[in-house]
Image 1 (tube, rainbow, N blue to C red):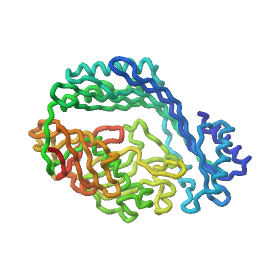
Image 2: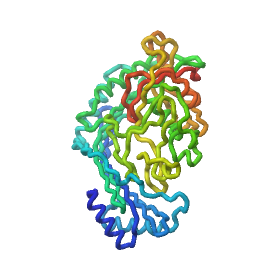
Image 3: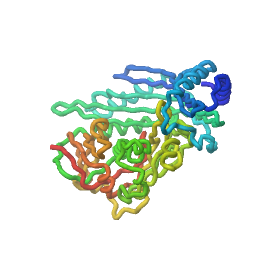
Image 4: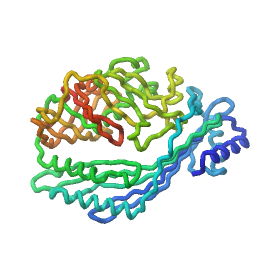
Length: 446
């Protein structure tokens, strides 16, 4: 992809020729290589180079048109600007998007975190070895049906006719391993693990392998669990899955569209236990996929969402911020319509708990490791959920795998029922979070 100065010069020259006074362009390119293996042989090898550019143009009536392209040479940009300009005369008349007031705000200098891509042969050899070691970890592990090792280079840019110029580049590598067991007279059991890092040499494949093996073995001796109300402990990944599923609680666009449990007046209200605080923190040093600006060029930042149980901020685009008399927060994605989405959660507790809990001495506690069927089991507009899960019944510190069960409840009641947030946090693809203890949740088992 051309550098940001060249792109800006191309775009400005084309806009002047077309009589366009106001425009902006956001684009990204992804260069990715990924491999999968099956019983010691390459199963799938993919290499791709994908680019996407969104061009927005405002006419003299201030209505806006949008088009997309993958071509960022002078002719490609000229055609995209012309198409967007023609579309602008059919643009919406209400709540017309505009430049972010922070599109030209300086961003602290950040080095480009890129790394050379490893050869495909090295990816295949690495993943074959990981599969072999995982199969050898226990006799019950019959296969690793889902696995993958990938590396990715990402470049992003934003520019507009008001002088905004943003660009960044970074690399990261990731691996996932998911097992399946076969034992006579028993149901197949599965477990998995995932790791992400800035490059293949930094990727901790051995700990990913060990976690997948340990979880798989822990599920071999399973039992039914009785239906009832239980004290439940959510793993980091499980709790962050719930937060993501109910992100309409703090998404300003959802709130304005009346597709949320919250209203503009919800800010400042206590919606959770005082033990719960969480941030959207795309710039966290452990977030290897960090973004320093959003699709409108607004700088990203650490944003408190819930502080000691109080809803303290919504996530905004420039448009939602203007309509709600707030500031953009760096969460916009531009397209035919500007959407708003979170980046990277950081869950913590800033209020001391009345008492501390530990799985080492827990009695009759359900430990949920992984929630499933979130697409079907969450009713975000009602606040309810009913989700199958992988987990264990914990008694006297002993973990017994649960054959099959479902956890159900209301998200706001769950927030209010948090009794403890552990001190040690875990890094997951979606953020950083400790285990979260919740009282009196419904479990449907036997």
